[in-house]
Length: 366
Ligand SMILES: [Zn+2]
Image 1 (cartoon, helix red, strand yellow):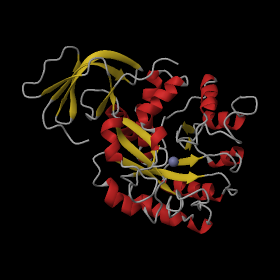
Image 2 (tube, rainbow, N blue to C red):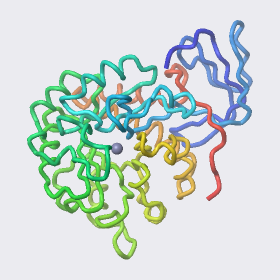
Image 3 (cartoon, helix red, strand yellow):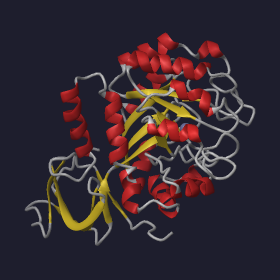
Image 4 (cartoon, rainbow, N blue to C red):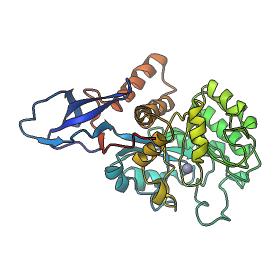
């Protein structure tokens, strides 16, 4: 976010320590766009402002790992800048709204002028979601396999590594071919970035996808209902999902309005199959129910996560994953250093990036 013109003392907050997963009462002093001090009863800055937040939660800016924000460029895209101040989301990760043929418009006309930080997964289909969102008989972006263009996607990623953090592929209802996933895998391997795979009821069986998934890849809509779901008929986590998780595949909520079965989520979390990341899959079509990240966090506290875990899965966890993605190619020592730095930016550490968020108390009760 833009830097503060004057120092700001945020007083009496419940500060979220994401690494220790706990809250403590305290103050945060922001100066020159950084967190200058964290402590108790800090002196107000000589020339600056004081904000008494009276026991509200003070957290790093929230990271929404899966939403759609190609505002005005794709019909499902919401306006990230309009949402950010009220929702506390400061990093928006667009999950495949654009493909190789459409990304540059997103970059130039939405991401570049935005105040919010916007990153993106590139859709394996060259048209991204341009054919999606009209009505129920829409054309899926992978319906025509000629659009699954490996070279075009890999080149677009190579030229836009500052913003593109992975490859998105939607294995949607009715899709009967593994070709989109196979091509997306090729692009991910060529660019050394992770895949984000949308799963749904009535797609090729998840077991068949397993050999195409690598550690660090992200499965989204993990709690989708219907057939081929995470839980079997007896309500137990299916073996193939447990196997993927054991191999380092990561699981994202991608909440949406139709992609999450809350009862399934509750039962899975009770069995220890909690999501690695909370995210909204916010679009113009679900905004009225999906709302924002704090609403999503509240829902998952209601479904069995602790508030501390839910917040970590909305701040540190996606920040760490994104960095892993974006800097996989650098040497190991640097990777560790850069990853720590990135994680610190999302924790309330002195000298961290100052984008933090003050939340009203979220639901504690189940
Ligand atoms: Zn989505």
